[in-house]
Length: 172
Image (cartoon, rainbow, N blue to C red; front, side, top):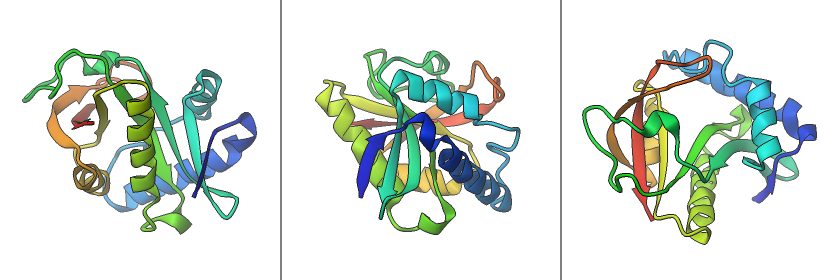
């Protein structure tokens, strides 16, 4: 599998993958990403920051994930739990999705593994992420990948502001 930083030329394919993910979530009875999020503008901003990564099989983009090396405002307060590493700097991922034709081929696990590598290379001791409480597929993937459920957070901005999310952290 190949990996690269996403470019603006990749946006149409990224949004196709997001559409696949939105349909998959809806069919699974999960209301995550059903309100127009994530937007093309969110990915444009991620690309500008150098945070959006795409993973390719046979030259076609199979998955996308955005990775940040800065603390997340929404993660400052955790309900019903706590972060494993407290307030130390961490890496966080968002907007992870895999195209329908690649689902079940280990792409998402590979993307998370790459996040671990990037975090370690930059000296971070953990990776954090969050998902909808009912997103069983992502929760199972996170747990299989070594992430531990740490509690609940509430998103602080954007189209999903005030939405409840379960949060996870993996020690590196």
